[in-house]
Length: 96
Image 1 (cartoon, rainbow, N blue to C red):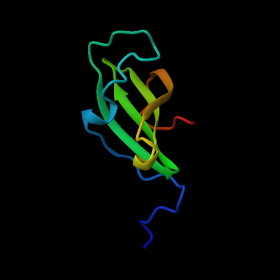
Image 2: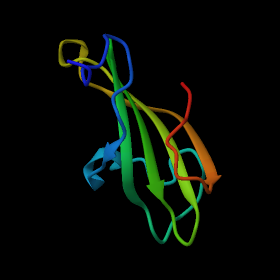
Image 3: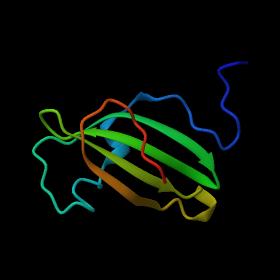
Image 4: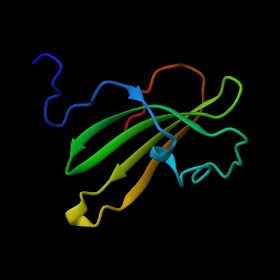
């Protein structure tokens, strides 16, 4: 049971699918990215789901997205809360 996440805790970082960050390209950066590929993510279950997503944006440039998705009973709306640009490390560490 050592692999279980405590309620409200973050999951381990996992490989991402592109679907996880659809609709967020350039949303808060006013940039048009030639490459915009979701690489990794982690999630936190609260009264909805917080997602921390690492996106490859070309060469050695990464973007970290902070996303919140409401519970389905609350409408399921997805909100981009924060963006860190020009990140060059390999760690998903964005804070909400």
